[in-house]
Image (cartoon, rainbow, N blue to C red):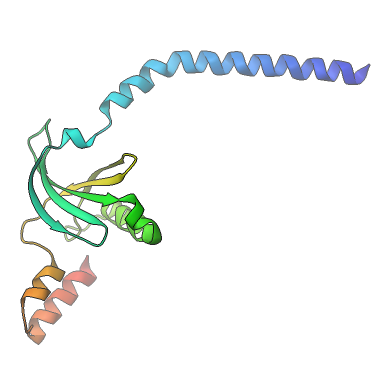
Length: 153
């Protein structure tokens, strides 16, 4: 008899939980739909120039539709970066939480089935690796300067 009452109480509790969950979902469904409409999509950043290629993907110059701000969009192919996904997450964390003026700021990150997209501050002038490939010799003073800049970042 005791077991039967206990099972009835469990059934009532499940019903109350489901009703509470339904009420919660109905109440906040509009909020969720509204928030979904504010999520950034690649279409919100029309491409206007290619900036370069990296190990996982390419970097494009894009213009944010709402503000007209020029940004860099790194498009990373998911299948290519699977082996080194920790590098991606580390880069994302550093750019989104770094407070140094020497670190490029990450504005948005989103994904679709094929790619990850990182919308970040556009800093003209290329990157250090590309510049080092172009010069044959770098003075000791230049090496010290770039090492210090990297450490300060």
